[in-house]
Length: 293
Image: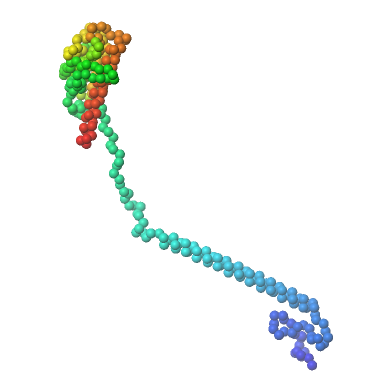
């Protein structure tokens, strides 16, 4: 008695099918197992397992990649949300069109130029005269003291000038000629200040004057006549609307030479003093105008 279907082909063993029979008979018939078939079946099983492992690994890799991608997107989303939430509301952000704050200027305006106030009669309005421009009874330049003599002033400028100076003063419309004399140790000097309406006229008068343009010496108040016929030293200059001249020499009538250093000193000192006095006049008027403004 045999088991199985009658007349049919022998059944094939499927290692993956439950309850399938091995391709050999029981030990009752005395046959030995088919070792070649067993080896082939074992090899087939190993290949299937490898394929399953490879497929499973690929799926796992895809799953991990997806998880990482989701994590990245989620992290970026959290970062963006955090950044946006930390910004102030639109109403709190200052507009670019907002007006910038203004500040009061801290720098003071430039000071007024004193020369402007002595360059034209329209600004040079303070009282003017020989005793105003040359006050006191003496003056000191450095360590040298000069005694003051007589003063004089005239609107007929040519009458107090000599040589070519009368013509120069008249041509440029001199309005006033002031004179003052100083003395020290037998050497005297007369300063003549010619006043014009404008700086241009004073500058032109200075340019036109030459070595023969002489302001007449002024004696009196302790100063004897000088430079009436002797050779004397003269200078010419201008500042603003004022042209000023000096005539210096010896009281005893001696001629002045290049070696007469005392004459040179008194002439230079009084010319410098005259310049300072005219400038001080401008400074005083500029200061007063600044305080009023």
